[in-house]
Image 1 (cartoon, rainbow, N blue to C red):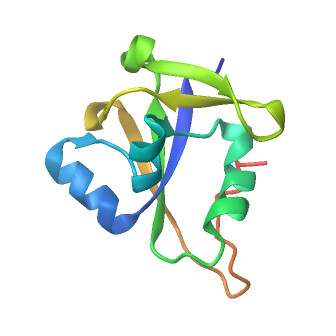
Image 2 (image 1 turned 180 degrees about the vertical axis):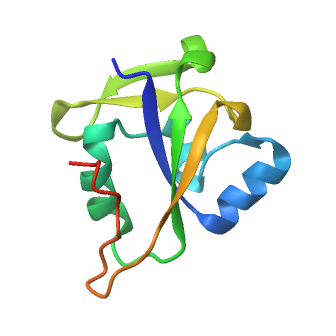
Length: 115
């Protein structure tokens, strides 16, 4: 499995997590009992499916290695394995937060490194 995964979140929620030093998840994550992440090749589809037309988003690049056993790859959309985090994500595991500008068609300007 990949050693990196990605979390899409609002800038305001991410700023709160940065202040706290830990990200505890979105309302959906809390309801589901784990933090939803995407592998590199899943980011574009996740962004399109769940975040179309939503402004002020960031894409956090997470190093999974320090999260150890809290990382579980589980079947989700179409049977594909997605990284789920059972527990909070310390900001020390975040390598980068990338702005995702909203485009006129409701999609986001995702860096070209994503398929």
